[in-house]
Every structure is written in C-alpha cells, then in structure tokens.
Image 1 (cartoon, rainbow, N blue to C red):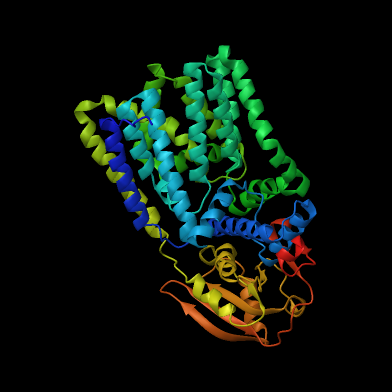
Image 2 (image 1 turned 180 degrees about the horizontal axis):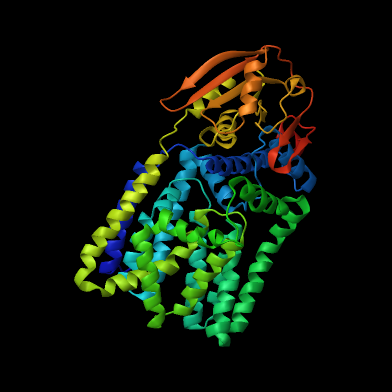
Length: 516
C-alpha cells in the first residue's frame, strides 16, 4: 500500500480543516429552515420506501407510484422533483444514526469538508500551494457557505461533485487521457443527481474546449454524451411521472412571482447577483477586490484564465436570466473568483498579513451575523408534534410563517409517527366545514407572528367548534393548538397539494399497503 505523503501545506490545510469541523459542530443546532424540512422529509421518504421494499419486495412501477402518492397525501410537502442523490445518502444515515435534522446536517457537513478538500486539491494542483490554502479558507468562512455547511441543503453536496468534475476535466486537459474525461462525466452526472443546476458543467467545458482545447473536442463531446446517457433514465422517470415540469412551475414561476424577483429585462435583474455576492459571500470590500484581482489575472493571462471567465459568465448570465433568484445559486461560481483573488493576495507580500486580517475580520463578522439571525425564531417543533400524537385525528396548519413552515413540522411529526397515523393539511387547503368533516381534522395549529394566512387566523378564531387547547411560547414566537370538538374519522384519503394547486387522493391508508 502506497504511503500518503503530506507536505507542509497539506498539514496547514488539515489543521484548518479540523478547526472548521469543531466550529461547525458547535453551530450545527440552529433552528431548521423550511427548505431543510423539505429535504429532510424526502430523505425520510426514501428511508421508509427502502425499508418497506425489504418487507414487500416489488419492481412494479405502479405499486411504487401508488406508494409515493399515499405518502404525498399524508405529507403534502414531499417534493420529489428534487434530484434524489443527497436524500438517498441521508436516508441510510437515518437508519444508522436516527432520523433527525442533526443527522442530515452531519451528512452535509461531511460534504462540506469534502468540498474544501477538493477545492484545495484543485487549486494546489493547477494554481499553487499558497493559492490553494487561501482559496479554501476564504471559501469556508463566507457567510452563506458556512451556513449551508450546517444545514440540510443541496448546494454544498452539489458543489462537491461539481468541483470534482471540474478537477477531473482539468486533469484530462493536462494529461490528454480519456479516462479522466470519463470520470469527469460520471461526477458531472452525480452533481446533476444532487441539483439540476449541475448541467451547466457541460456548456462550460464545451465552450472552453471550443475556445482553447479544440484538439480535445472529441473527448469533450464523449464526456457530454456520457453525462446525458447516465442521467437519461432518471429524466425519463421524471417525465413519465410529470415531476419534470414541477421545478419550472414552482421555482421559475410561482416562487419568482411571490418573491417579486427582478428579471433580466431590468437593470436590477442584472445587478441582483452582484449584490448577492457582496452581501452573502465576499462582503463589499472583498468583492471589489476580487473583481480587481480578476481583471489583473485576465490581463496577465493567468493559468486557465479563459476557463475561469467562462465559468463566471456561464453562472452569472444563466441565473440572471432565470426568473427565480437565490443567492445560493452562485456558490459553485465562487472558486472561479477566489483563485484570482488568492493569487493576487499572495503576490502582495508586503501587505499580505494586514490584508488577511482585515479580510477574515470582515468575513467572520458577516458570517456570525447570518448565523446568529437564525436563532431569532426557535420554536419547539417536537413538543407541538408530540401533543398532536396524543390521540386520533389529523392536523391542519392554519398559518405557515417561515419559522414554523409546514415542511419543518411535517418532517418532525413524520419522524415520530412510525405508523403514519396522521395526515397533515397545509394553510393553502380551502378551509371549510367540509375539510374538517371529511378529512378527520382534530388539531389546528396557529403560529404567530406571521405575515401570511391572516384570513385563516380569523376563520380559526371565529369557528365555534374549535377550542383552544394549549400554547407553546418563546420570547419571539407563539404557537397555539386548537382542538376540533366535533371531530369525526376521515371519510376520504385526500389532500390539497399547493405546488400542484390540486387535490390528490389515494386508496391506501398506509403507503406500505400499496406494495403488498
């Protein structure tokens, strides 16, 4: 067995990685976000599906489809239009470590460590030791990078696979060996199975090869073909089930409209990610420095400057044109800005130490500000869920503020309800006497403060059959639990799915019945 040799810079990096791990574990218990609840629930679905398939083996597509529909009727935040790789990985960790937000966060933290390692490896291999270490450290302390490293989100795992693919493509261009092109394609596909955005790897590499590596175009085309070959079965399933269109309806239209994101037809639309990069990642002084460094890097014709420019432009232009905008979409772009910035900082030897101190002070301050905000609302989802499990009857969430959104509550309840005895109804469900009488609702939850579902609050307060039962308070939150005193067992197994804007029904009370 070949012995691994660590040089001085590798040892520095390992010390930094250990420090990052300790700090991350200390901060990992922030209150869960709505998206975390969604991703955690998807992982729980796969855990239950794999477990039930071991008891009732089947390869019937219709049986698995009916299983999924029944699960969705129970828990209408089951969003299977997200690529499944991260959720499948977390599902196995649930089996070993238990089902909780902490388990999912631990998996993402492992991906974060891997991302830092591959960024360091990539930068060291192609840009030098000092640039590698500085790039990895700067990346780790950026506010949104650090925060997403301790939350159950797909961005860090997707960036991990993206950077491995990029590293292998660079290795392929250097060595001209086809095996690296094949491996790069495999990891590009894995990135796609983690987040749809990864498809940008293909045009980035194709454009670079067309511009600079035309002699390798045959291998690049082979890689692109292999990527589409690997992901095509998944795309077929998504198309056949109708799931392929949901991200475009939900993320590209509904979310963008609800948030009133600026569009690419306006100056504000093109400036959106400039503001996002300076606010959620670099801080304004460092972002300005990164742009200056990039200009110098291009002027000096630094190594792979064409690829870095294409990388930056591809991400910036594509997501600017996309109607739905999120600061986290820029995360895989960061290395392309950090490498020129780190190269520039390393060259300023006389002022390097003061510049680093100021840079890290700015980043630490901004990161702490972002993480500390997460603790402002800190409801006890578990206590509320336990209360609803005390007796028969389903649950209606009459209000869904971001701090007590349906996804966090549904995952918490589902992780405790091993028999799947509950159906949860969201605030988008048409609230009426029929909803209570036909769907067996006994518990109604109202969370305050809220800037949405105000009309639902009024309906709850004016409904005579709803009796106040309990209140769960913190210094900033108020969760009220009401009991419907005219409760009757449900007559139909249906639920309103907000993203579909439609009611779906199932014949199976328990999803596992669909596999029998």
